[in-house]
Length: 345
Image (cartoon, rainbow, N blue to C red; front, side, top):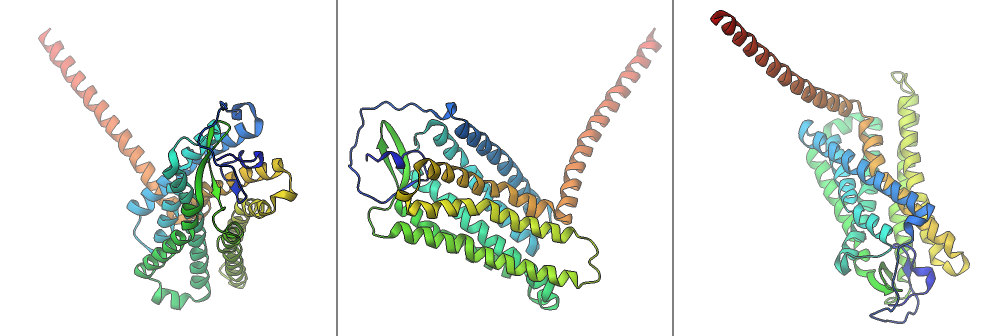
């Protein structure tokens, strides 16, 4: 396919107009990303998100899945970490595409990698909502929560959340496509087959992936804060700071992405450079949520921090103890040999 210039600068750009279909191009494409400050900055940020998110979520999976006793909370944390871990594992595809300004992974991976991004978006947001509602129920209805809050029910809720996320990610598989422009292959959203499909999908993602979850989270944490303020046992301001950080991170990471996706619906009335830059920055900010989740939702938890310290410190102590025992054995052998040698002399 051959595209107008406004559609070829960002892999997340959409197209819903008429195009001329061509299979080959006579142009030789050369990447200019490494010569642009914004592109290099986003590349560095994406690599950091990949490294921090991949390692951080792998650590959460290891501790919550294998080191901690299985509870309702660890079920939430493990599912959230798996979602973010899978997303981070596929980030190198986007990073490579951004650096090369060319999609070299084929038609199938164009659809699959994009669907993984939206699967993560919906699954992580749904899980954050579940965690918020669970905390709300535990604070407001503690007796009911103690009697009905079980691991089995939590597992069923997690499965339902994943099924909903998968169903909402299907449009990405359907409409994602590849095409050629000026000697390069791009992976983009092709909405030419169905009228109004672009608008319907963008609005549905905004509602299901941002507005409704954000309203639910705000309501839950507002009630929790009011409840904790009336609780005489709550003397520390840390719960309020943590909850404020959770809401702020969710809002900051996802708002720019959805704003520029909406602006893209009316791209004729906006500058191409603004939309292109906004989509790139918004996508990077949304990706940053994948490594902020384990920090905000897990590492701030006292149980997780205690288990993390115990696990890491115990391994270090064992390693040092083994080294010490090896050294002491070596020294004892050396001293005994020296003793035998002096006797012979």
